[in-house]
Image (cartoon, rainbow, N blue to C red; front, side, top):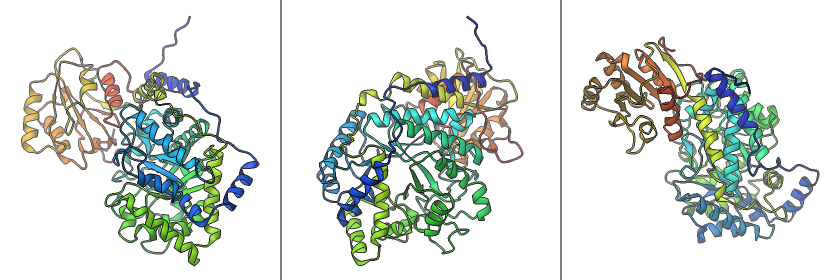
Length: 572
């Protein structure tokens, strides 16, 4: 037998390609298609009352781990179209509990007069935005996947995620993020994006969409028309995308066009101002017919489900109440109106949203034709993905979550993403059997376990996330006595004490024995231009930290390539 020896990056890509093509346990046929779906949707639509139609347009959050009386009322009385699961709302305790919850909610919905199931939705992007973690094989953030250089990584991550979601009775993932993170100062997208190149984001996003379709999970590309070059977080205030339409077509819209070409069934709106398309000041894309009907449907030709971002976010909340926001978004062309677990909001507001929308339909403020158009699209997606009787929903099986296959795929993705920016002093590999010091600002008590499991002789020092002068001095003193030092940073632009710590270590002459790695966007490198050895690990998740440790100690390559540009003259 011949053994083929490949360099680290080629080997990593070969492994990813092989994993992405493997049949996964429980793989499903693609979403249903057929001439009978429109007829079934029309028959259902004709049989619905106005309150039933209005309810179908709502994707709502709830509190607690069970089918509470309040949640049962939203399903059985207000006929909501779907539920959003949040760990912060107490919906996620463990995987068996999530499966029981989704099963009970679907059983109640399917007992209704039209035997329609629920969209059971979650934000499971991977990386920092993942509602399911403990007991779930959560994948790396998109930018880590972009660093692998292979769209097979995006497909594999989507397949692993979709397979586990289905096993929990979750049929819709509000992913992938296909924003182009072209602004290093962007406060909300960052590693949630595949990178800064529209072509790369388009390839990776389309690969993820195709994998979700093949697994029978509803994907939702977001945030249209693009949130990657904004200076504010729309959870807090309304940002502006300041570019001309030609730039939008060349950058922001490219990945959405690719996702549409790959058959994405849903697109989520962004709460951003787009003056090049919508001239009314302060009107977010979510409430702009020019953006949703003109740009998304007209120019890009999307005829699927338009999903609003959460209508309780700060960008909306400052100007509109929940009911008014729902009416305006529906009139602009959104079909499924999302109410998430936003600060200052409660599920108790949601019946009032239903009443406001029914009143708007009865008064003619919302034309019946617009409501029917939205519900028709909702029904077509539900029927295409088997969310109605007699199709029958798949049986939830929490034992099929976090399998050895899932964990191996996550491990391979993590190792393929670790990126060496530079090693001027040839510091790598470090000696894992020798004493050393790990400096990790802001780390929790157990965070370093994945690292020290490989290097038990490394001491760990955990200063504050933004270490002040006294803590930095203590860290420098400890580092003077260490033969090898690893410093992990995370968003040093927001925590300048981290960059100050690295620079003070360098000023103390410790550069030749210093290895620095970022655990988020790699822009930290611009703040420590003198650091001789820099890596990007993309996340502080245990799988990423372990992959970083393996690369640092020479047990695995660091084959990644930066999918973004580090600003400044000292960029690698």
